[in-house]
Length: 292
Image (cartoon, rainbow, N blue to C red):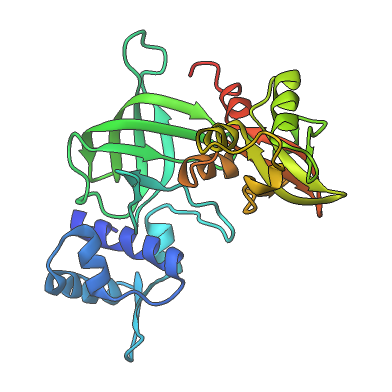
């Protein structure tokens, strides 16, 4: 069956949106993604319905669903539970579009590295020169950044000149954390904290009340306290942060990296149940990226 470019564009976008939202998709939603006139999309939908590639669902919550024949026509063997590989521009994920295949065309070239990226969804929203981030991919947690230098609408492929590829660390944070955990007690003073930091060459430590975590104190907290003319004999509880950033030891490192930037923190406490067992710092993360 020979489909026109616009029919392929509409059908692929319908499938992508359907997998994203799991409900019938309206023609206006497709038109917004592929930047086409809604009337044009509706007309094409009637043609696709006539040849058995989409089903029309009536009612206010209705729209269109792709048929099994549509997947076969586009050679898409999507299975339940398949991982979505996102594509983003300017830090914003592009909705209705996801990556289904990446092929490196000049991986061994000494000066350039180009890739062809096949996507599900409309290509009309992409422009030559767009800076994109692709991934992470499901197995190797590969993150690719690059610039669009071409488009092939027949094969639904973006041509990317890559300038950065990172394989994010895949192990759980317990393999990267610093342990055993060095802690302060609620009875310790600021001078006790300074001595502890100096002795162990660290810049922060959790504050414990017996087995319970009550806060965290950093060298920045102490410097601010000294600037505010606080006595070094004051308890660390007077300057500690009680809203401690925590994460279970079984969380993967790539899942917490963004939290450091988003929440402007330098460390988080690693927990096993209610018990703190280690600390993960920005330095621990940077060590996993020797090229940085």
